[in-house]
Image (cartoon, rainbow, N blue to C red; front, side, top):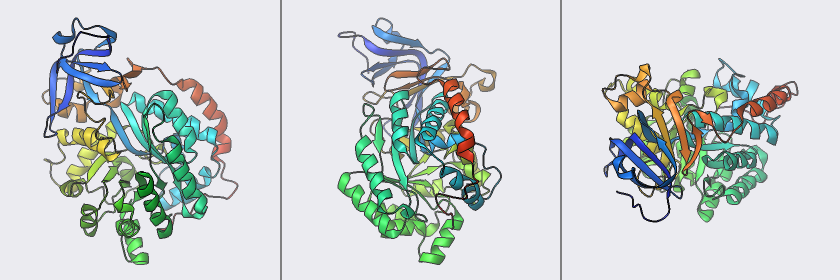
Amino acid sequence: MTPSAAGSPADLIISACTVLVHDDQERIGFEEDAAIVVRNGVVEAVTTTAAVADLPAAQRLEARGQVALPGLINCHTHAPMVALRGLAEDLPTQEWFNDVIWPVESNLAGKDVELGARLACAEMIRAGATCFADHYFAMDAVADVVADCGMRALLGEAYFSSQGPEGRERSLEFALRHRGSADGRITTALAPHSPYTVDDTDLAATARLAGEHGLPVHLHAAENRDQTETSLARHGVTPIGVLERTGILGTDVLLAHGTGIVDRDLPVLERAAGRTAVATAPRGYLKFAWPDTTPVRALRDIGVDVGLATDGAASNNSLDVWESMALTSLVQKSAEGDPRWLTSRQALHHATLQSARAVGLGDSVGSIAPGRRADIVLVDLTGPHTQPVHDLAATLVHSARSSDVRTTIVDGRILMRDRTLLTIDVPAVVRELEERLPALVDRSHGRRIQDYDT
């Protein structure tokens, strides 16, 4: 599409770059010496550098030697948990929850959540993520941070059945209050924690509320094989079976992790009435020494989108979706015993369009094309670790790093330019967070917000 020089200047023109594009079969391709024209937060045209030479624009970025990608999407995280990064190391899952994380989370105040979210957003912007799906507590604070820093997010207020009906009601109130806020950059979901902390009655009520209000559901499910085996022993069905019988799979649902999804779950997921997606965060699974990983190939075969994620930094130590992209490809090759799966182009598809669909934004982000929101990152491939380039897709997935992201743009607004953050003062956030850490990490009170027993 060629832009018109008539009318008002474009808001932004990015020129002299290589652009990752998708064809009508969703196959990955690259257009060289290309330009992107942005107007009103939307991509107006992807064209040639020559075609925009005389086109007026409020801002111009020459990106020679750089690749323009759709902004990466972190499909499941707990952004405020960066405040707990490195606090619970080298522990099995049950001890990680019961002995450290859930006792510490009983101390959380809204200010802790705000500062953690602000630091997390800075980390994600620097790593080329433009959107994230969050599932945590005191989420009004996270919504305020997203509005301030310019990112895009799918947000949900997490709840347990142990909180009583008030937990579920708060989750609904949050979702309705913030849906469409931050100039439309915030979408919302209902967020029951998981089938092992939320009972069937609450899950069924959540499904009804989701249908009544047109909201998706975001929860942990079949996180690992132990959870699946425990659910079978206690309830006679897998966690996925619990979601089916309570009506959750009749809604649009984003399932976190799914390394415990087994063969009997696949037909259940295939016949689900709602849009079902799974978020995979392989670094955490390796760290917890879980024996399985998300069955990406089997899910793809039944039409379930798999988006890339990091989980929270308390377990993953990182919010680097770029690393998740490379690890997903490598772990899937190992799990399947097939070096031809997951290819670099398939990994890029999971990082872009599939991740966008997973968070319910498949019609607006995930590709750089006319009519799509201008969520774009520019990646510098001039470093020695990315040269020479024989296969651009492989270079992006297996050689490039998140630190090669030079510029991050959301809705046409530049949030980071030439590695300089423009919307978050990181030193100020770190100073204030460090002052609060002693009270936050104190476990002498003997409380915990929940018990992990699967």
